[in-house]
Image (cartoon, rainbow, N blue to C red):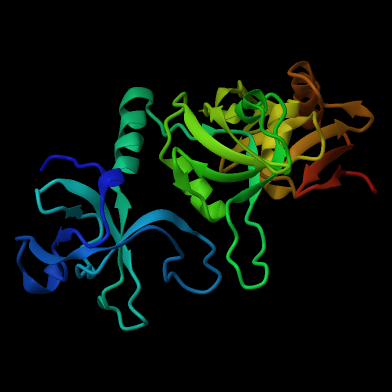
Length: 318
């Protein structure tokens, strides 16, 4: 079937879910359909996945077309037969079946993701350099917009003129309510496509043009090591993007399954800061690190983990 446009959906229009629910019980591979309407748009939801689940699905389509086990991954289509979403999950109230709360991934997001995979072989995540929070509810009135708390140096947001304290109230004419909604809209934006952002600052309302770029970590060169670690030289932009306290260092971007670093407190996302009194700031310092770790001599390695500087001592007391 042809692909539709999830940005053009209207609440109340027909929605048809296609899949093969409980097909393993029916001994039948023929698909079935259920019919309902678009119940809501732009939903931010947490799937029922057990205790401690923190994952949030942003900007989802809600439908009352019955989505049952086996429907996930099937298309959600409109009355013209155009695919408008991909069936994802339901809220069942603990019963295991549909109670009229089904959710689908918007087709526009899928089109962007598939386009990235075909063209680049991976998903390119847009980067703006804006860090936002949802303002608190005051006097029972829901918040309006999202507040900018930090702008990464050298980022698209800094170039566009955003400042901490700005209130972002709309993007491309669509009002914003929460930080989750902001993140959800970023997921659907290709890098390099301009976004019209409505901003309020010190009583003034104006617009800024924001052009997302590729994630700075994706653009950064990785340095392979004999001990199974992929390292990236930390820059102020990368540090601000990741929330690192140190503006320099060597970021652990990846660890192989058999890397000896997995037997230490150091993990992916940590920044190696110094080897003894030798700072680790540049690609040349990787050679010092490789030589020391391979020598078997005692050493102290300082690293940043979750905002705190820690140390790992090898064959010596600290």
